[in-house]
Length: 306
Image 1 (cartoon, rainbow, N blue to C red):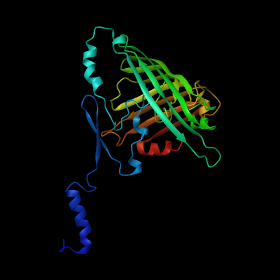
Image 2: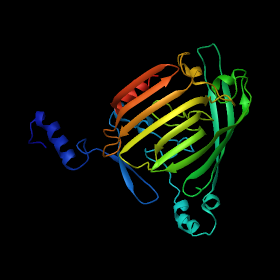
Image 3: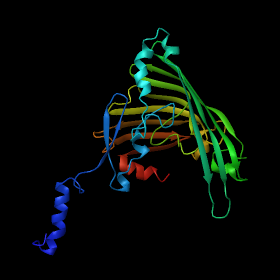
Image 4: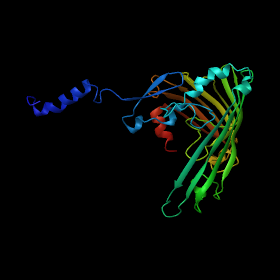
């Protein structure tokens, strides 16, 4: 480009890169597919504000804390979907035929230097065993998950890692046991369960996630544009305890009612994660109330600091 003036060299090179598809004019996408061969493209974030966040997940009551996340999946096991048609042809009743047992292992090393005051450290191993029955008359399903975390090495302050009890002991607990009912395109879950919303969620960053005792109503289909939840949660199980506690222990004001009520809705736009909006999220715990309406990006900024 010897014939171009020096001031036009950089703009000319940029236009050439954009035209060839190399420059910033065309955003990059990551693709993920489901068992049915449906491929979804997720734009790679150009800034931290555009990064994918669980805030955009919507409303769920899953059996596994990371089940059916809408972000890119690192691995998809296609064997289950290939075997599903054969299983459905079996003569057994769906309650037994569609029963699923799963085991998941997890090992976690946590070490922290709390500015010289304490140094909690622990190497733990464990995981969970999950059970999910088939449906009875396309109406009732039973579910349960047994979690455990066992210390391999632990310091005196290991309880502060939240992977063991306050005294640094192991934890084995029936974190989930619930019944799920489907009717009129609705899904009602009653009992100890996982709840995944922008306001209340599993906080799955330790060996055992947060679980909640209560009742949750959601749409049966999870792939629709309009999503919602109506729930009442009266107790929750912290990650470092075997028993449950009142929601007031999570920092809610100690007055009024004893439960946590959530009512939320979400409109998911196309393409996913671009302009999804939480229309309303209303929570009340012991008399306190909060309501928020914002886009995914601004919501993550507001709630990411709590």
